[in-house]
Image 1 (tube, one colour):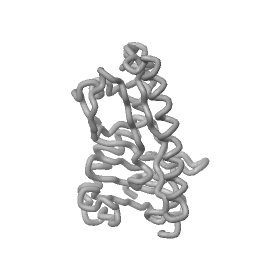
Image 2 (image 1 turned 90 degrees about the vertical axis):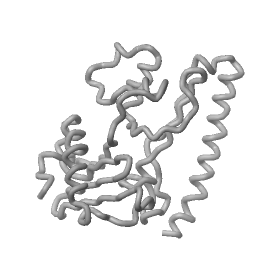
Image 3 (image 1 turned 180 degrees about the vertical axis):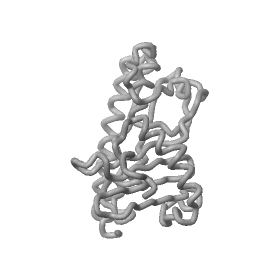
Length: 216
């Protein structure tokens, strides 16, 4: 694991430095043109990277290093400067940005994400209780890994052909580095997260993964 980390981390950090410098040029240009207060600037990513932790080189797993991504939004005079633990997901960005720009009525009904513009602007509004995790093997949409991340827990359930179903539960408060699988120790938490969080997500998205008995 240390060899993987040494091999990949320096290049990754170098890339971060390069992106930071170029993104800074965008912000400076907006300020130089007097456009800062009329421009919403958002910086995010599609995934994180384990860089050798958990013996994982890259993404496609449920660990914090892979699941958590940067999300910075800037709108001087409208969005107050602060940090927020909002459990927002990528599909929420499109409706949120439309709402911030005054186009809430134009958000298509088929959009699966939710607008959290009110939370961005004033910190008020309903907050999601979980984020969905999905990994689908190529050509097998009814298999793979599904899970949720809440403010405290990460749940991952894997169903692959010819393999026993695997359930992983991490308590991210007691075990922030996710070194222990406590699914067998807390079956009530697994059941609650599955019934109250995971299944509603999968029903909402019409995920065929549900066609296989989740308790088998």
